[in-house]
Length: 547
Image (cartoon, rainbow, N blue to C red; front, side):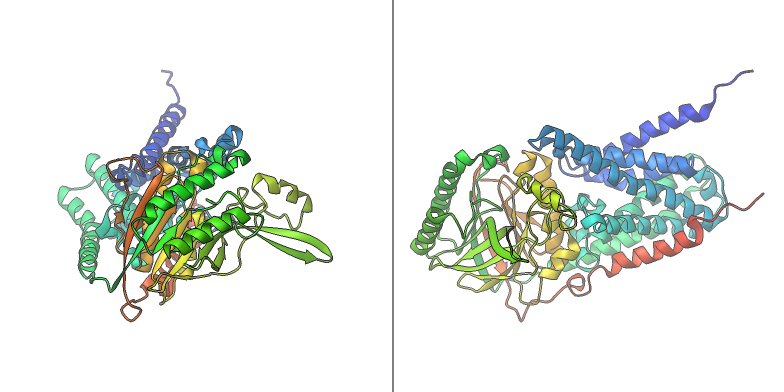
């Protein structure tokens, strides 16, 4: 009797299902933010990969990662340069999918090493080992997940966008562990629970596990989760009354990106900023904040009219101002005159004087700088496309307001890096201040995702974070990760033009304590990397024993 080869048809079905699982993981992030799906999707994808093993695990993992990133990063298609938008969306999604592919392959590979069983059916393999060994493997899978995120955050300057733990940004008690582990600890818990639930469920479904044993197997990760939630609630209840309050007016002009690029609109843009600022200043805030590159031209050169208006406003209202603009520096190298361009934040005091400036240090590859331009000078011709910015070299805290509060300034993309943001925080830092322009990506989920990521910087460092953006999401985040002033009054729109007020609770320096994460950094994350590397060295590339 002739039969059809099942492997090819099954492979197509599995790849399609893997793509679907990836899409479900993508929608667990904002928007729509169905965060409960993040507790299921990773384990489900790993089960699909394990059913075939080997190279098929790589393929299934890649398709799952592709579905996830194409869904979660669809806002890249809103970049107002269509060809660049499509190429960027596809290339970034494919590159990031490789990490999920490696995770699926690596977890399965380590399982065969831990059990000594080289069956292509992961459920059958797990059914033959003890509960203790299964629990060990579940933990290894979560550790491996954190390892991939640590690499993503650093490789080729890093792109730690939508790490698994970020999907839980509204699960406030759970994310309190970020003050010890950064967002990676939340990713670990979600991945651990996901793998444990899915594989325990599959063993029950295939009748390879008794109900009592299943409860015993799931009891460990669930118990740890309950302990972590208890810690989170206790930490939130320890919040003490503020010693002082800082009032900030945050201007959100909501300029579309094509309008920002139009030189004929510079005057209209500047006048729009001034009008919103005058209305906000009627409430007499301590500080007035404009978002990233909000000033239509350079602040300190070639822009005398803007400087005059800003100086007059600061003096008239006795207000401190923080504003985003480009800056330049002229230097000579071997007798050749060169001009460095910076994406900068400026601090103006109530006397209208420039008190300080900060140059963005973490630039976006290709968007703000061209890699290897010093080795290949012809690349400098792409400066006009946005690839010619120079990175700043040092952190510059802003001391501002009558309270002399100290802010650690982060510009746009800088707040997505946990290990970078913590280096800007000291015992003297009162809050983090992020200036952002996400207008490149229209009006959609990019703004929500960026804000969700920023939530973790506040919890990790135990201080509030203020976000002033071009077109969303302007808000402030308290030290426990709760977002405030998300919507405008009487509206559910986060993208409209307007202004918001942040009344920031601050503590005296004597009462501030650096968090474990601020002091010691990614101790948890690097421990996961080392543990995973050891397991891969032992089991990852060992050939199955001959039978």
